[in-house]
Length: 389
Image: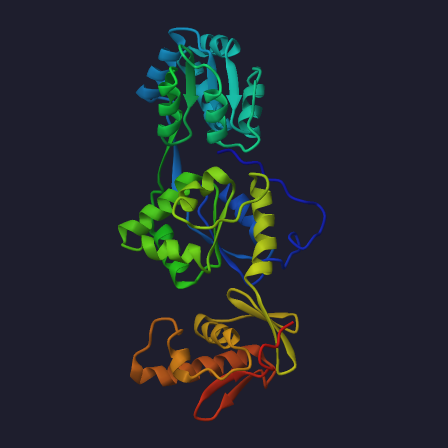
């Protein structure tokens, strides 16, 4: 999917340079990855790069050539253009085979249905006229639009976008259409799978606050990577819980929502709006605000702001602080704090590990009196019970 990067020139909360400060976001994109990461880092995020897939062009692929020749064997009534990059690739491949003129002639006499604005832009750039684009930018709406018509005897070319559109094609054929599938490119797992495997582990352990997806194949690649290690259920549970699954649009979100995972999506399927959506959503939904020891605390993913000053925290002190913040003003026993420490220290070392985490937490926070020791019982944040901002 070809995605335009749009950004607001106006300094608003979601474009402020510190909107994502203290949060860690996993990025699975391959195409335009650095551009998207820069949008997040510009807002203060810590970014974990874990490319999930790679796009393999099929300019010399026998299946694409065969599909093109099949389309040219008779007039085409409808052409479904799913992606701009795919349509441009098809036209370029046809030119290489000496078939560009014939293909353009067939497309000129056909109705061109474009899935979204980028596909529509590619069609117009080729000097062709688009006939209809769905408001949702989804293949489902394109399918329903076609099925509302009499398709008996119509020849429809469907440009695939990296994976089979099995249900889409089957529905058209059942309605009486002859469907020509045009596989312009395909998605394959990224060559080095280790960054994606690490991201799976980080999501499960709480090491990231959100994972951003820009294509459905990237979602499937991450789920498949987790499944290969026996971690798919744990990953789905993490996305259904504390880790935000941010998807560029409804097509990308489909594989997650089919598993009951809630997703966050921008109003428009663009990288810029996805970055702004994260910059708005995480501070609103993933921040705990408290007053402790007379100081204002804002607890984020891997950092805490004390009276407005951001202070990064290592995993163990952060885990302890978040557990104390679950019960502001209440005493939390050492045995309870032991359960949240990363790595699961042994019982013999747990007491020392908790004390060290508390010591490092107090040192990082700076002002004294925020975390109190309650002798023989545990620790508490020094605030009235339930006190917040």
